[in-house]
Image (cartoon, rainbow, N blue to C red):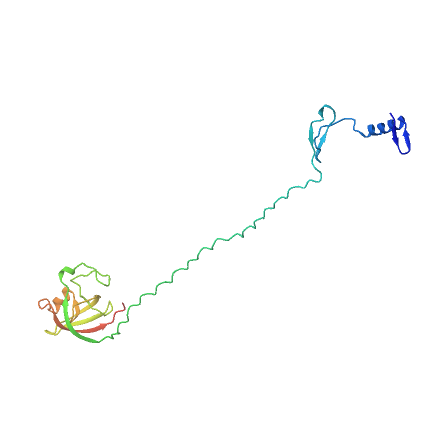
Length: 204
């Protein structure tokens, strides 16, 4: 086979040289059209179709989201127990001051006496009333005061000791025991005019 060019005819040998050069550039084996990625590899022979995954060297690790740390709440100390202060003591009840009555002071008024139904009962001073003792009741004179009671209608008198409170009837100033009223002869009248003389002032 002969070719013509401007410079003449090349020989068959030149043609063969071109063929050999083209043959050397062609690939000897035809592989399947499978794209090879950066993390894939192929093995020759019978296992050519097996794909082996390799970790990418430059693959970026997923960012780890940091959870904000909660600051621990400061411990709240329990409230201190309330200290109960002892209650202030109540002021002592001070009895009202009684007018100081000196020995020899004289009072006038009406007198009565205890009936038998009061015999054996406790008096304001804590003593038990005995109708046969020479005692009497007065609204203000301290317990233990000794006085002389005189019946103004007959002039008879008796000496008695105050151990109770009374009488609480308007117009009367003293209640005599049954026996004291007998001595001054006031039982029949029931209520009679008297004169009271303080002989000894009581301490209670």
